[in-house]
Amino acid sequence: MNNIKFLENPMRKASGQGADTAFLSLEEAQRARSFHKSFREYQPTPLVSLPNLAKALGVGRIYVKDESKRFGLNAFKVLGASYAIGRYLADRLGWDPSRATRDALGSPEAREKVGDIVFTTATDGNHGRAVAWTTQQLGQKAVVYMPKGSDPTRLANIRAHGAEASITDLNYDDAVRLSLKMAQENGWVIVQDTAWEGYEDIPRWIMEGYTTLALEALEQLREDGVSEPTHIFLQAGVGSFAGGVVGFLASTLGDKMPTAVIVEPNKADCYYRSAEAGDGKPHAVTGDLDTLMAGLACGEPNTIGWEIVRDYAHAFISCPDWVAANGMRILGAPRTGDPRVVSGESGAVTTGILECLMLYSQLSEARKALNLGEDATVLLVSTEGDTSPRVYRDVVWHGKACSPVFPDA
Image 1 (tube, rainbow, N blue to C red):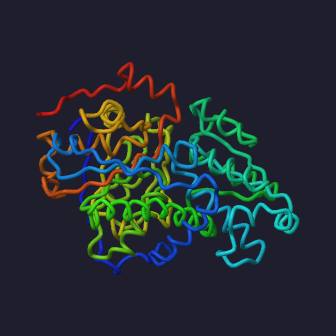
Image 2 (cartoon, helix red, strand yellow):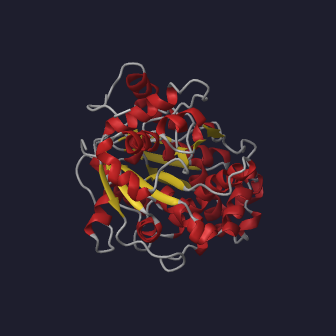
């Protein structure tokens, strides 16, 4: 339907029969959260209930984890970047990870032992800002490369944390390769949320950092009387976030883990295409990756994240930009009585696709396959706020990327 593509996972395995998720266990999630708590800015982000939207769509409950409130940075990425940098510095110092706190790692004694380190990364904005913020907190330096078409506001936000940053004429994956090249030539440390052969520790730590979000959400649901969600929709760019959360849920809940649906833009749907290939291998998407969902404009899967998602996710969806734009408008102008959530283009796509699944007759088979109905408790993650104010206004105020079709209800 208008380029919304749905695929049940043909490779899914039973709990514990697939990729190893031990590094995403409850114990490791609690370790990551202890690290995050050492920052004065730490507070669990809100878990917002949208009962009137749930009623309108025909599901039991909808919850949105609002990551615009994370550390004052308007996005969730700092959870992964900060934890990876913290673990790297602890390793350099020869410390047990439990010693890694913001104050300890930023102390003059620690700084003297590790010396000056330059951390580098490629980013569309949120991850780079997270790396810049963390290095500023810990007295280190960052160099950040952004793909062509990146929003100058996001560039300015990165530079505001003292980083050297620039917009290149490359797509995201080539910007990653540039960052790696510069790291190798200059002795810098690359902090990338994707993995390749020989580069796996930092991506694993980034994925572990994201489990703080999932741990918070489960605790908040239980405080609201919900033992666990029946469904969770997760965005995939390189897949570190999706892999981290799916792996945590598989490790922690086992057979009780919710139905996990992976959502991507059509123009950067490397997870959908990898699943569609059916050979168990990750497959890349090439080209400009030109999508409204800038944070998901990644063509090459994180190999670690892919293995976990391949084995434990239930379904994959590839969708056009108007789905994300609809999600932004739905959250930004909520049903009467529901709270407003300011969600950016990558943050709102899961809300947009949930509406499509529930209200478009053309997607009825997908809805049935996912068992989405009045008994469903759906968890969505708004991974970012209005990190590009211009894009947010264009979509929410001026109707950019309008839906070419309309729902049945």
